[in-house]
Amino acid sequence: MSAAAMAAMFLAGCGTGAPDAAPHSDDTGVSLTPSAAPSRSASASSLAPDLTTTASAATTASPASTASAANTASTPTTANTGTAVAACTNSSKLAGWSNRRLAMLTIAVPVSETSVADATSEVTAGAGGVLLFGSKAPSDLGARLKTLKSHVPGNRGLLVMTDEEGGGIQRMANLVGDLPWPAYMGKHWTTAQIQQNVTKVAKKMSAAQVNMDLAPVVDVDGRNVAPSKTNPDGWRSFSGDTAVVSKAGVAYMNGLRAGGVIPVVKHFPGIGGSTYNSDFGPAKTLPWSTVQKVGIPPFTAAIKAGAPAIMVSNNIVPGLGTNPASLSPTAITTELRGKLGFKGLVLTDSLSAKAISAAGFSVPSAAVQALRSGADMVMFDLGSNVSSQTSAIATAVTNAVSSGKLARSRLIDAAGHVLAVRHVNLCS
Image (cartoon, rainbow, N blue to C red; front, top):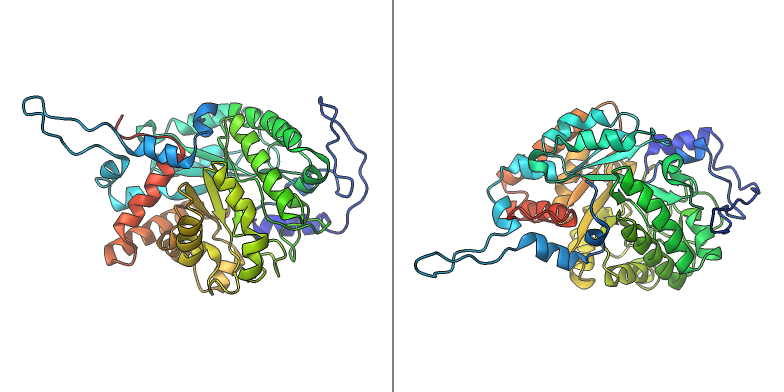
């Protein structure tokens, strides 16, 4: 989550306790206010987490089938000889793109939801997505995003991301409706209720041209506190019980997909019980031996249920490596891709986090390291230098390919995953 936004939350006093809140209900008659959590307010909503509309049927496809459908086409033959010609694939098409064009596709550009046109030049240059920041979306957000999407080269679609987790982490609740904190959902709602209520929100998100949600949080952390500088989870977690988190996470994920929104399961490999909030400085998870037993099962369940995208945390995992997980080939390539068999889109948490700079990386150099490690898309925080930061990332990536530091095949693979999650087939 954005350090600046988190700091704003502290100044507003949102992390200083959990006053009782009068429950309220939606039209299903289900109470929406956590019994131990504050009700959502403008200041609470400013808490920034980690930071082309797809058809509902498309977003429910598994990542494996998505990649297959988007990456292959029937093998043509010559008219006179019947000799087979090489099949067209997304990879073969992407191989003809310039390194900079490929690099742009791996970047999610931050933009205020009240002025999405600010990202027009980056979208025109081929950015793979935009990440919306804010706490109150304009009523005409959908129209504004349609205009922004019209600038996408070749009409290949655009990932429009936001954070709608529930409770204090909601950016467009004024348009799509409130959800309670995940801790409340995990304790008081059945999985069917979670899916049903999330679907309602997702349908309105999709109608507003937002097609990706950086949720659900499947970290296992049962602490009954607001997320803070020292605790990134708290009420953001469904439960301290691994089994509860696994079931609730899949239900939330399926609710988003049923509403036409791509879910992003986070924060791999699990940051429950972390020593600190990585936005503010170096943070460590529980030991890898513990994370494997407690934190990994919810991700395993989500992958088995067809998770299309997973976000990797900026926390160091003791016993797994010395770099933040988002910059670790062991975490991404060996564990997530290899042992868990995940074939979908891998996103980093915000590379603007203090944990990243503390590890010795600038945002551009971290982007290169993340791609080398197996990530497909990188994110950074909203600030006054978005355009220059985007350009710096793209330049760093292209230079890394030219110098041999980043394999071109890895960049093509990353770009292919971005297209696959959007169900784009370059051969059609």
